[in-house]
Length: 354
Image 1 (tube, one colour):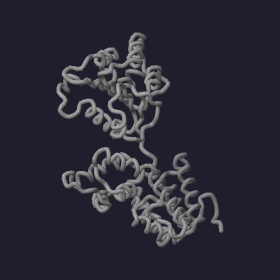
Image 2 (cartoon, one colour):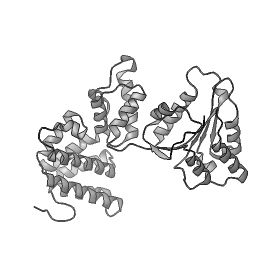
Image 3 (cartoon, rainbow, N blue to C red):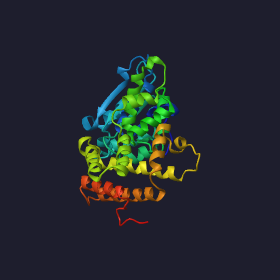
Image 4 (cartoon, rainbow, N blue to C red):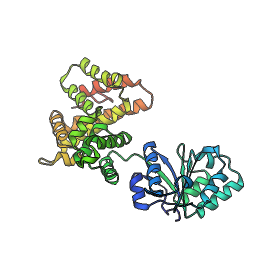
């Protein structure tokens, strides 16, 4: 089977869905999020060697970087399978083989193989880092449609991608539970996948029941979104020193990364802004893509502020983000400055406006 004719792209389908759509191809050159790359390796192994396949040990070769020459890898790929329909040749840190000094004869042989791969072998090339698209041999893989980058989905696509992944992995999970998981973990796709599998074990695969939002609440211990709710509540009701103590607990005691906390705060204020401009009677849970109890808490917070205030807060968060990334202020000091401005409803760029 020839390599799939797909243009270079970032795959947010997930490894299980990708193989479910295409089946095992002849060549893959992958990089990206480690947890997804590892799952792709496992899924591809199962696709090449379904349960009960004989002779797996005779039909699998694993190489690492420059420990073996490229010619040896190609010899393994051109070897016919024994007692099985396909072979799997896996190369880790493959960019060491393909992006550095490659002899003319090895390069010519590799280009010829990419143009006409063995129909009975799946060659899996895993980059130790991001593939260099300028390298001649990588360009050939790109042209053949073999390059795949596994990236985290966008925050907007997280629930949909997790639901699709759960379906492909035969994990039963309610939509509200997926939303609760995303709400709890924020834009941390790797952790969300790990917790999805942990929740699957928690409810018991043999039980046949779905994962419920209550299971997420019991199992997911670190809930940054809950901390953001508490922090923003404190801006309204508490003295400045208590606000700063709460921020200190997040940044120093709980070791919440400042940029991650900023991202969570930005999402929270975007949600508050959405609630403040929503039409009366609108389903906030559906509009925001969050569980009903989260929508209720957001509505309560939104009632204490205004559209203008939430827009100012987003502007201040954006300025704090630039200050942090540009190294203008030390992280804790920048966050202290931000929350005090948010508490007084002053934009970071100037005095309060009416």
